Length: 200
Image 1 (cartoon, rainbow, N blue to C red):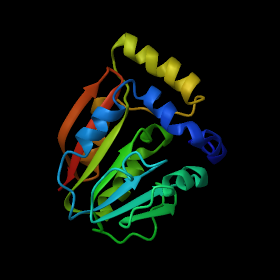
Image 2: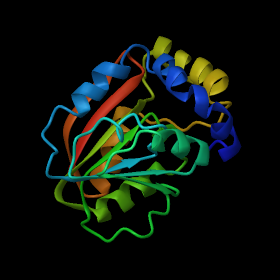
Image 3: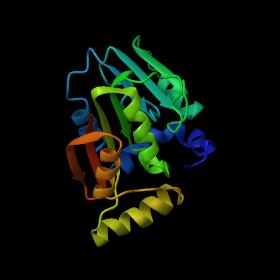
């Protein structure tokens, strides 16, 4: 995981950088993620950053968790009566009781975690039965060209060699082991993966 100081520095331009990072999928993926009716749900935006999901989703209660003060400060500029922001680490989601949330979202952040399987396992505890985990991030393709892009441009230029990515098969295994069933899985632009996993 990159040091918190890195995110403190890039927070003012984080959305611009994320738009570039997502290779033209910034708007379409968010629209796809938010296409269901969540008005009566309690949702968690895990690694919420400056508010990609937090400040757009319509829900009964929205909780955003991030470990960067600067990111949270920018996120907080958009006030919403249903929104709560918490400084915290996705590895240690203390303070949330089991079966708390209907939906959990994690976008463009899983690659920061060496053991994201631990995050998924904890998410499975705090999700209600039938709740869903939405994930969108880089994935490890077996295609030579896409693999080269991920392991050169993204790894060294974008992430300063602090990056852990997984193949489609590895993602399926992680979610299945944590008690989830994959409802949707889609590869976008050759280097990103979109997953909707439902807690059994």
